[in-house]
Image 1: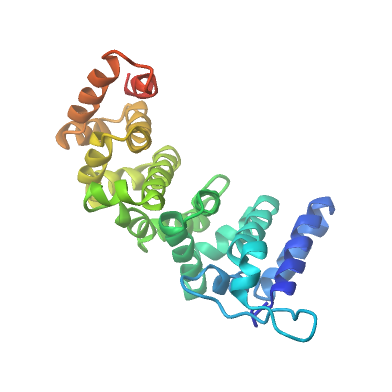
Image 2: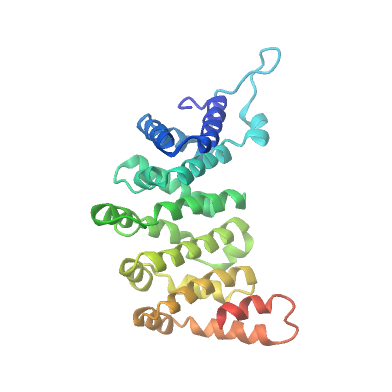
Length: 283
């Protein structure tokens, strides 16, 4: 796999799929052994931006298959993401430990996943990358130093800054690029997860250091319904905390004005075009 061999990548995919049938103790030992052998590091080249040179199998006659010929069938990036997802579903702790480590390899993998959230043309892969990030930022069951390390990756070491940076800028860029638009929605969902599970760290980032007022206002003010709903759900999560700091942030940032304008548009007939989808979270 380190040499980019797709057959070996397919073997690893099958091994992860079949591991679901293995008893938990043996499955845990299997993943611990794979992590020790560089499980995460060998997948990073398949997730990086740009073309990937691989040792492709040969066709009849000895002529080598090019990656461009194999990609429609094998899609190495999709295979690598599925392998990560399978491993995370079985044993989330190693994935979280690697992505939240202070070393370079874990940071590189996290940046690859964040880039896929915002730039991947396949929305299925965008969602899968977002789910892996969500698993990494889930502090459930963590205490003390382990929890601090998990949260530190996204706050002190800039994980969330990388995640929200593509949301900033002109909203026209979101209208013209479906991948960036869907990535902004996924980023809002991850921020909502942080508000629910990260306590004061999420509060400080969103209300002080994230510079989120302008991008959220642009998204809520967008004429496109699918761009409005994700930040609206984030605002609903913030309001549901009943925390004065979140409430003051929403008021100070002027985010209620586009919400009220959208609510008025949704109440005007005809409402068949999706007005109800906005009205429910707005209320």
